[in-house]
Amino acid sequence: MGQRRLPGHLVDWSATQLGIDVGVVRRSDDIRGFGVLPRRWIVERTSAWCLRSRRLVRDYERCTDTSEVVVLWSMTMLMSRHLAARQRQRLSPAEAA
Image 1 (cartoon, rainbow, N blue to C red):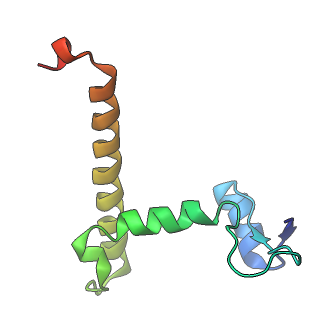
Image 2: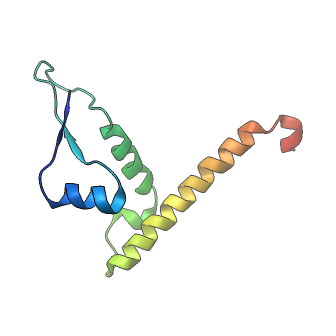
């Protein structure tokens, strides 16, 4: 399964503004039925995490700025929970009490 470069403005913009390389992951011709594609699950997992926030399940916001802030708030809450859980795992049971 190879990755090919996309033509167009999105590739150029993402490379210059964000410093990331955008590509399409193609399915292999020899795979029939369901097959896990590389890196796709990362995007789907992150989307699922965001949708845990009730306000992101539906598009309630009128302004895109508000929507952006709600996404940032949701990811901040998610990452702070992950970091707190990781910190608790590092502490010994005596230190956690």
